[in-house]
Image: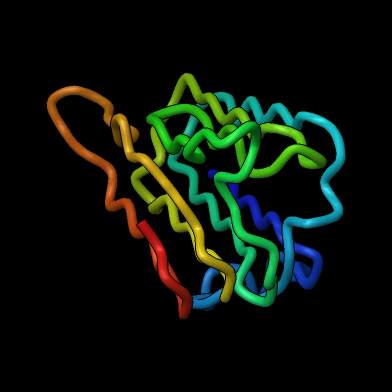
Amino acid sequence: DDEFFLSSDANEVSDTAVSVDVLLGLLDYMGKALHIDAGEGRHRLLMSDSFSSIAKGSRAGKSAKFSRSSLKNLAAHLGDIYFTTTGNWFGGVNLWLGIGDDTLTVTSIPTTAPNRTATSIYAGPGSDV
């Protein structure tokens, strides 16, 4: 069972990770693709761009895309995030967007039949679509 925190301010340790409800920070420094292979078990993923004023979904005029296994097209200068597991994401998958005018399309959510994963997307301030 693992917990993954993606953000410029992510600094959790195993003792505090289970109690984190909100993750703050930026994804603006992630210049290359990130691949997470969580393996077996019950996992949790938190991704935060909450402090960013850079609009996400601005890569060649395309919407950012959130799916059961990826977060893509964040911005022209940012890499995509891929997350897979042979277990499940029953600990939850959470995404916080920033104060820019973000454009996000949700195409699917993480599932492990017959169950679904609690998936939360917090748009933040801005004229988001």
